Length: 58
Image (cartoon, rainbow, N blue to C red):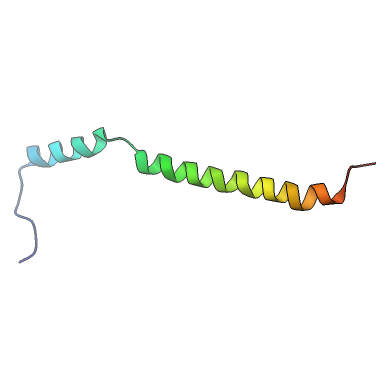
């Protein structure tokens, strides 16, 4: 194919994979942090706009 990369040796490919893995799972950690922040924000919104306006239990 015209636009494909030239063939590389297995050692070069393994080294490239090792470099990517050495950087760590930063994207996954950021995604998990954003998802957690959204859940906590929804919980606070639910608490403030649903539970507090109903008043205390008798």
